[in-house]
Image 1: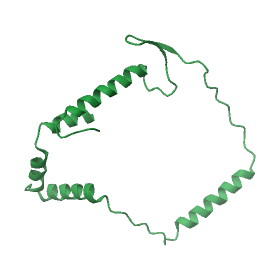
Image 2: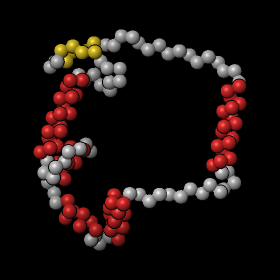
Image 3: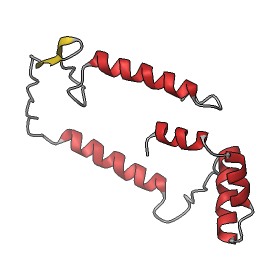
Image 4: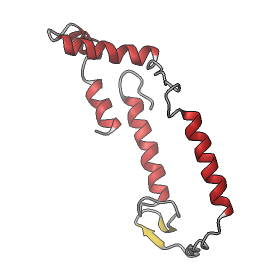
Length: 135
């Protein structure tokens, strides 16, 4: 579910009353999970302990890894193949903004100006949601 969809749904219900019903549920499992979730959200998750006193301790594994790394540096390696990066970027055409160069890191063929416009409009919509949703 997209954050905007969740925000719209939550804007139309009484969240406090919904949480209250879950906390007072007849199911002890639901009560436990809700209380654990709310406590984790308030206090943060508890840190987990790590036992490093076992035979295969972390330090022994780290030392073995360092030894292997040192040995691999002395061995001759085959040359790494060079990957050629294309020097030209495709030119695309946006119906609203005209031609543009596709950015190297682009995940879609959408115009960067259109992406910025959409993000700006989404922020405006989120600002209209009761309760002051701004994320």
